[in-house]
Length: 386
Ligand code: PMP
Image (cartoon, rainbow, N blue to C red; front, side, top):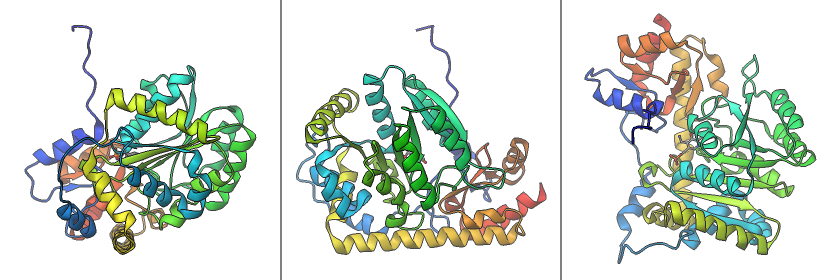
């Protein structure tokens, strides 16, 4: 065993542990991506609590390897909308996964099992686990800058990388809520990208960790739906951690478009094989909650309503932060979702932690969803003072 070397701890979870151990009463956790209510308390979407409390388990037997069939179908309908679902369902391979992280891992595992030299284009910056997972499976990673000098989506940089790397995979984050920048292609750019992907024989992987928390499902899923409609090879990894507040229940789905029903069944058998040797079967609690919500129009409406309230609250928190930082980071007002990068340097981030008990990620990602309304002026003033 002496060949092993210590691997540095995960940045986000290490910071979270430091936060928990910090005895200062005024501490603020704007690091890890969780949504707290406006008073800073942990938040579970009310209809999710209600369904969770009403689940009457008669047994805890295993789910099928792929997961609950209704959960899989209802999830695909949610992602693609009813019409595209009807049109494409017989070609959609589906597998329930253990949260979004496991979905990316499974997808990378699947690709690596048939493609020994895969190349994937990924934005820089991105969620730090992306690169770790793809490196682990031996992908060549090509990075493009997500932002241009005006803090807009860097379409030109991505275009150049697509043209230089035909036949490669491209990782997109779905919706406007890119982690950590909250900047993503516009609808017009999604359309242009769809043509570029088609012309250059690329395949897209959409990673959705915040669907419905940007604008709404229709608008957040525009890009992926457009690409599916144009029959471009596409996979979708969809997490319910944030948008159903199911974080610890590890619930998600991986959907892959195939050419025909026969290929769908073949691909599903491969997904099942890989999932079986890694995880065996998915956790049931989250899948059953999601299935109950999505199957019932009243529950679904209530859930969507809460999502819109959460988005509105994020907007309010952004506005308050902007007010107390005197428009210094005005660009955050055009961004949606949990995060923004506020371009502080590592030593400023360190000062915020040591002097003010304010925790941000070292790349200067701030999580608006993690700050209570009353903490925001304090955080803003501290940032102004450094
Ligand atoms: N992708 C992105 C972009 C994320 O931000 C996250 C969560 N931080 C995930 C995937 C993974 O989510 P989960 O907790 O469901 O594994």
